[in-house]
Image (cartoon, rainbow, N blue to C red):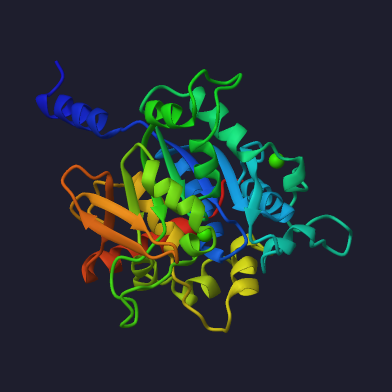
Length: 335
Ligand SMILES: [Ca+2]
Ligand SMILES: [Ca+2]
């Protein structure tokens, strides 16, 4: 006879083994290093069964943005993740660390192997988003958007195609469980109550279309959250020595404006909330509506029927969040 204690243990283990979060990651990879760190963290969360990464799409309209995404995915042992590239997007200049994809050892082998050499060879991001969403069960996908709103605004406007008879808005409503984004500002930033956050400011029309029409719950991680939980320089110096060169450490050093530098973790906060919403890392604002002004300001209006909320983080949560990032981002890939 099995002991009641063992049965209880078996039951509680079963009850906590949640399904992995089906995730699409939409990023302006290259414009800041937090995009790369957030994607590294997704790979570690996938390794432990918390995430299933369905696709990555870029909103940075430089061909090396998608190539860098493929190099990072390959570094972490997932070379075949589907990658889509924006068309007609913003920030076409090469990002400070995108060029790492071209680095070679003396014998001519690449530092970071990848077979997607250019975003021009990648599928259109919107087509890939439609294909990916259409293939999933209703209400099952979370999108984490940590760059511009370009792809999501184009997705909203997309027409029925071979992948789905639904238009963009109907497809999103059917398939997307929740959207978590790094964008906007909801607290005073250095005494400025009207901070124009970069991800909104660079493509305001797309952000406005999104804020007006996106049909699912949206959780906003404002500028103030990632600043508060900046990544410790000491970890960059000490925790990435297991691989040389290391795509995260080399990218961080190529990106940061001075050394030492604790970089804000904006994009990582959106991933952490999307995967672990019930771990107490963050609190949520009441529901409301975010209105994007013509300059790119994000005004929040409380409304019980609104579909927007923003993240709130106290001092204890900040310390927990920062340590979770250190341990998850620096975790070695499986060989
Ligand atoms: Ca590849
Ligand atoms: Ca970003």
